Image 1 (tube, rainbow, N blue to C red):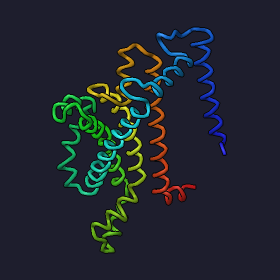
Image 2 (cartoon, rainbow, N blue to C red):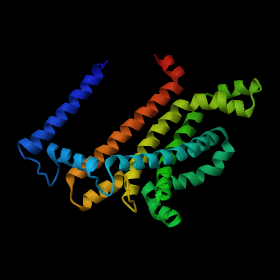
Image 3 (cartoon, rainbow, N blue to C red):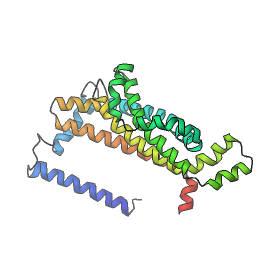
Image 4 (cartoon, rainbow, N blue to C red):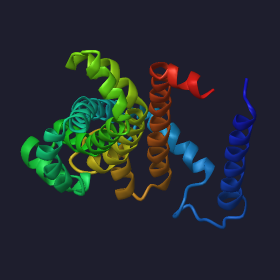
Length: 258
């Protein structure tokens, strides 16, 4: 059943669609050279789904982009979260790693594109590297913050009970820091999608970013909107999947706050 918030969301979307139709088709206040009408968008969507565009149909472009995001995101989580937990738990590790991290952290992910291409070429590996860096920083920061927000008596009690290091990590640190970790994962996922499109604008032969690049060169507003909405839909789906995983992993936290 759709709740009240769901109906409000549907009403908002319907109002925006109606406004889009009025401004582009009914009154012509916005010309097709600036923004496509619903009919032009529908024609572009039909074209890329049937005849294809930029060398492939939409499903192939979307699937390729999705795989790149998932691989870059997975590598970032697998490296960033453990590093953040380690830095938060061990002051010596923080003293060793944090200065380097603070230097690298302000560098925009897109600034790594030239080096990624130089090191890894124009293939997918370079794009995964750029996505990794974009998702890596939020993962580290939030995992680190999650550990530092744990009350000191929790650690002291665990040490008094003779808890070995591996159990301290698995049964104390990770569960307590999990809410902040998942906050970082949401930010990392968003950064992954944002960076993917920019990375695929350079040296790509397939992908949603490549569709956007080709549509811009062809001055094809309808196809540009198709690419933009595809990124939005894929981002929405992956965010829902991550939210479902968070609710499953943090069921205890949800129950405690109800």
